[in-house]
Image 1 (cartoon, rainbow, N blue to C red):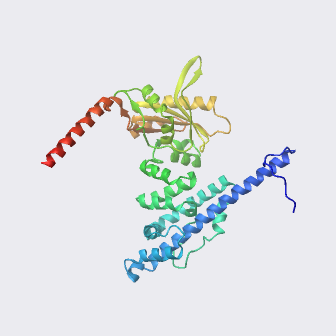
Image 2: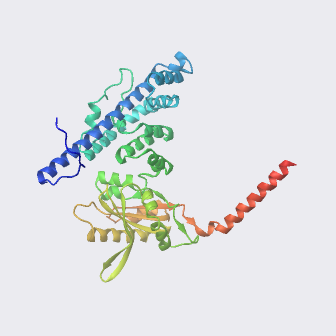
Image 3: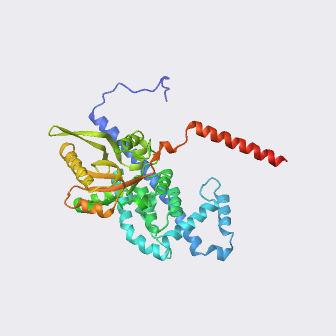
Length: 402
């Protein structure tokens, strides 16, 4: 075999035509697809093992049969046999048992049967996004009946990493909440930190409870998606105003100074298009407070801010802006524009009556946790406070020495 002359490998001056571009794009796509399949299979195999081990600990009544230290002994035996493997800690084995029990008590089994269709839909949704039948990957892997006596492993669970499963069973108050977050992880690809943030923000409690007219004016699927996306209350704790009495302009400016935090609070999929978006009709200028586009919903979202409780006339103004965006900005590929009014407080009856006769889809939410600048201590005040604390600490030490 002849030796090639030493050289630096670089792109060659070759005739790159459309066939080459299409072929290399297909090769890249195949490789990405193989990576996805491999990751899904590895995760699926590990989760099935965890499910089965949790099942064994439950069905064999291991603690009653072999003593209270049996889980720790199993952990030691597995780590001794597989020293380079992860996941065999005593705490992890306890999580496996808790995981199996969480989803397999009689009450949970009845409820999980009702939700399994939605979970399978989530698998199908992910399959479409990856342009590969992930559901088939799972089915063709090892996800059949785990044993004649045990409960079958729910196939969509294979798309949720183990760390997220632990957070869900640890933090969820009931099976409905757990299944909600299972869907969130599958649909949005939530990392473990992102999932924890969703729990801290009480996403389950706030999701889908916004006062709205979506069911009357949107197709069923779109209505459901919109209600999943919009919250009934927004935490504007990242925004600061100068005084306890403030207007919409000051609130809006404070929110948009922190656009990253605003988008995080709005939720996944929102793109910020601007504030005070100007509309010129009949020679008159009107301005939309905040305008978003939601990628998943494929529609514009008109957001009006009110630094006061809801008033019926607010609905009419929002209706006008939604219609204006539909007329001037919406394309044929976009879904109907959504209106979102965010105010300091509201009465549900007030809002529902205001919606009567309005055919544009809209919802009303509230906000809280605005910080007041005057209520925050100045740097000088903080420095004085630190000095006082240091003095008190020194005095305490002096007294203790006596």
